[in-house]
Length: 206
Image 1 (cartoon, helix red, strand yellow):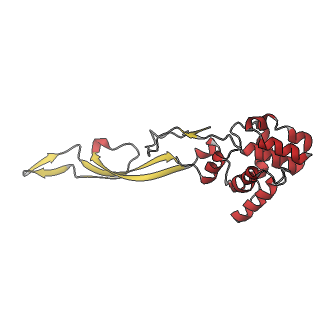
Image 2 (tube, one colour):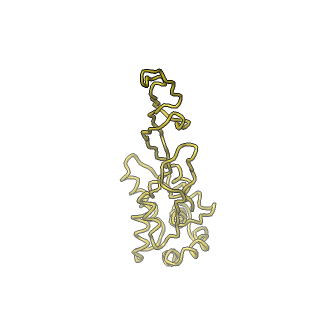
């Protein structure tokens, strides 16, 4: 009876799944309940606060070797009695969710900061705040046998620019593309590296 109930819920539309997510509290207990809730909660972009225990339990499964972590997380998800008839659901549990290194949330993706160093040339007046390794021509140089004071000489410097990584991890992409998830993540910045004064840190939104 439990297998039929869980399978039918997970195979229906995801909005219906989340509307009926309380089935676990009535039918299941312990890690079995948490496993079913984790499947639901990891797969939706409209995650209620009640998901916190199952998410914490899932990502709390960790071993020295990543292969052991994957196996243990897969075993945990398979505690949910969904049956083996639904191939798409089996792929979601055993291949997509079990390979998630982190939770695919906008808040996490926005912590994936990339930095790149650029070598620049220009006038001294163009050097931005925060520039490094600044080298300028001597401000006193000879021009037609006369000493000339050049207050805005040519310079070289380096700039460290940043951006939020615009590329989804493969496991997040796989999650978004699965037919049983409604997870949507959008990158709302351009992919240019920016100076600190121009750098936007909230590029990913759900």
